[in-house]
Length: 156
Picture 1 (cartoon, helix red, strand yellow):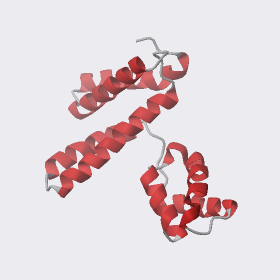
Picture 2: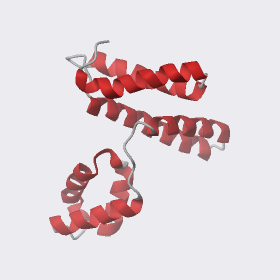
Picture 3: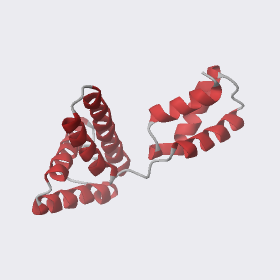
């Protein structure tokens, strides 16, 4: 697959890290990165121009991380600790490529600022707060966590 110069940085890093994991016989990293590369290839074939920029690559990595986070929680609920640990190990590999995640305290501080700026006063104003807050946070936090914090602050 041909990569654009914009995507070359993250795409190349994934390629290089996959090769290194294969050399080091790091099975978890190798399998995780192969799964990400498969998801990227599928996404690039589905697009009209067959190219993914760094933002799109990052979004796919985030989706894969979210999937593993949720699967690990499901396995834990079922008492399958070994499978949950495997999912968490894969999640740790994916988190290497994601921006630093904000702490709940940092999200709450930003949420309070946005609530004050938008004049939000109740749960009905959630629609005014969330788009502004998510735009500021970007890939720095899971949307579910952000939503939960904003709902708490708005008394929902």
